[in-house]
Length: 315
Length: 315
Image (tube, rainbow over all chains, first blue to last red):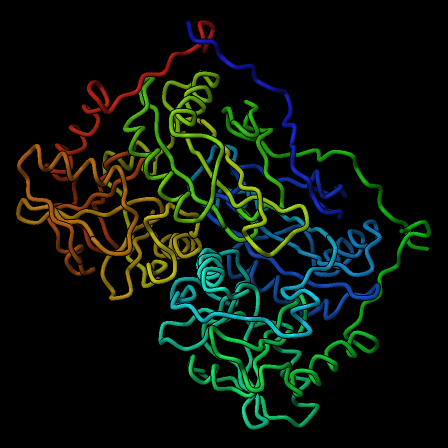
């Protein structure tokens, strides 16, 4: 006779999580308790949009820009959430304040959610809002920031705008993840994907820039409208450096004087080797260094900052 | 002075779930308790593969085929799980048996999982296996099965095989979901997407077939290798009906004698109207009816069945 297992009342989770605080359903929770149902269409159909804002030295950076992009995505996906922009700003603030983190990675998500009947019609799902603050992370570690990243250009085509609107920040990353595995196989540390036409698109979580003869370029097609990318464009304008959005071929990238990538997760990060080719001198370039410095200076003062008020007893 | 909210110890979830039983971390759980961390890369990067097998009248249908496809996807995504095929079959069996469901939708998932440090390197994540059984669902409801579905062909391009390998069953569905909203706007009930070349690809969770002058065709490019699709191909062979995998234009679909779709969620389902065009007579076609009948007959007996042993006190 077959012996049937017992049904447990609650899930006992052996997973180790980083520190952090999350918000769901009006509740602030330790990050270890922030979980979504396996029936949520955010998992089962990657039917979700999100944004990530960072906190540096106790202040959000360009919070309004991230909130605006997020609400744009929510609307394009026909979702709705019961919070306006000011309320989400308050929720994000509270997640960071309760976490005590001075430097944080703050993600906020709207998923399609679940329907009580597991309906296949997305209009029947109750959309779900989640936010969390965890320690700040970077695409490049300190060693890589100093010597520059080693990237590989793969022939994987970044998911086309004809399929998924890249202005809706989304979780469709299998192309990027498979790119990473290809890059690792080639001894590189990260991957750059191409677009439909074989031109440079973007990498896992970052936009790409080249420097040639003092002029800067970044792809204009089929890429995330990155807020760090936009910040670099503004820095270039302030520094009177030409910065153009245009198609960039893989060969142009390999023969550039400098290459750098941009992400909320790490800011401006140098790339000094692409596949077997050192970029320029093979050292971090001078314009990359200047722009990186300007980027972090913007965090110290001015209108890009939204300060966090921490509880008196915060760590 | 700012008043900070309290941190709750546990999440109190207001969501209503369908009945069902899940498996995670060696534990069998009510479906309402089956949750993954918001830090799981299965959510944050849609970095996951899965399969769905159905149970009909107390037996799995083609369980081995679903298990084989699943393990193929796990390997292609460089994931690993601590269960072999026989062990997963046992887990799925127990989920169904404990749920008491005679007709069930049984999904099993491998996600990239989480890393304790929120590392961006997928090799640092601990892969997670989840399985669940919930009541059987269908793309088409009983009324739609009788009169045929009304589909719309959208110009959204199904995510290309150059980006994501469609033989790895995956959750990259935003193109399909946006297709559904377009179809709803046009008064249709479901959507059919095209491929890079403008030919018919697939719809949300289903493959597409046409019948013209007694011969059957289905797209060969950029589509899921559906197991119901494969079953129909085998039924056609047994019935000595020509069934060819080839490129099919939207016009061919609109001028077909019959159109049907296939999915584990519902089997063989008729389409009798595409946009404003009735297909053939506008009624469910005779070959569609014959193939549907054969499909369900295969469930009654034979090697495709794997019977469930239910507990004596099961509902």
